[in-house]
Every structure is written in C-alpha cells, then in structure tokens.
Length: 236
Image 1 (cartoon, rainbow, N blue to C red):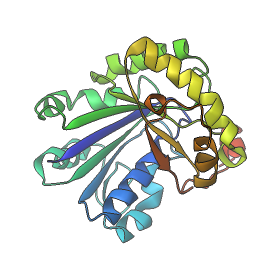
Image 2: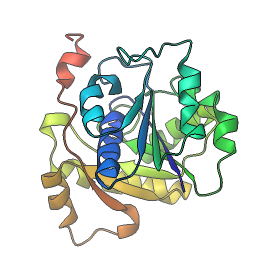
Image 3: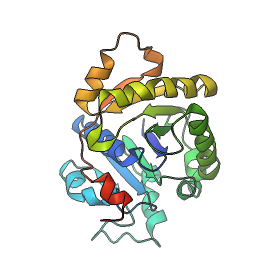
Image 4: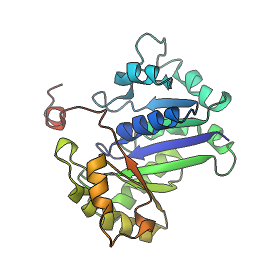
C-alpha cells in the first residue's frame, strides 16, 4: 500500500534533511519514491538543490524550482496530483516552515481525505534549539496553528534537536524531556529520534530512556551542508 508522509515543522527544524534521508533510505530498499517540495518559504534550504542526488537515487522530485523540468507555479498543482494518481510506494511532502507555509497543503485536502486509513502520516519535526520550539507548550501551540492552516492532523513527533555543525548528543538529550512532555500532553507519539549517527548512538546509550518517547532511531546523513550563520545574516 502506498505510504504518504507529510513533514511539517518550524523554520530550521530539519524537514528537508529528514525528507532527503527518508527518501534515500526508501529508494535503497527498492521502494518507488517521490518527493513533493512545497517549501516555498525558504529558498536557502530547498529540496530542488538536490536534483542530481535524487536523480542518481532514482527518486522523483516535484518542485516549483526544479530547473529544467518545466514545472512552474501555474502547473505545480497538476504535478502534485501525480502523488495520488501514480503507483508510488512512498510519497514525502516537504512543507514550508511556518503556519502560512502549511497553506500549500490545504488545496490537496480532498486528495488526502480520499486515502485509506493508515496510508497517511503527518509528522511534526521539532528542533528545540529553534525559536517557538523550546517548550512543550510552544510546540503544541505552533502545531495547532499549522494543523489549522494545513487542514491536517499531526500523527507523530520527530525529535530532531540539533545545532547544525555544532550538534552533539546533548541536543537530543535536551530534546527528549521536551518531546516527552509534548507527547504526554497531546497524546501524539514520538515516532522518530533523528540525528547524525555518532550523536544518535551516544544518545541511545542512555539507559534511562523510555522507548515510547524515543521512537525509531533515524540516523541522518548531513546532505544539507549549509552555514546556518550565513543564512541568518543574509549571506547566501
């Protein structure tokens, strides 16, 4: 059965990095994979910069900034329709990083609603090192805003606490109790904990972790080799 995954989250939460890793891992398993780039908010961390990588992995990309593919803002909706009409094993939607960005999903509400139960997952990627994500209360407030705009309901959290190239296992340790509190307050499970392999392995060695608030470990290859300081200061 086709699996459809929507990735939402705040700016800098790591949606595109996780989308790339999920897609590459699925393709390596022989699954027919498509990625839909709906992040029209951030041109710096965008999926369409990885056309060559995705092509090499035989992953189909739909993006409004997919150079040479003839996909423009006017025919983007028709291209997105292939996610529902064609026979993929996995389709990943990478959505813009704020409530307004989630609006891009709303136009496909009837297509999502037509999927059979269990076919759609909506994951809220949380990086507690980013503003508006430092506490469970802030996470749930932002989640509710994005759900309203996207007309979708979050089914799982992903702990992706990180500081880009300065990340350590401590980021995941600090994210764990915050995601646990958000999960306990909302009833939404933590489905993945994501991080660079070394940091993730060190984090998982902690014997006091409750598996319910860790989920499945998701090691990430650092495809997004960008300078966060340059981005925040406009040097890109």
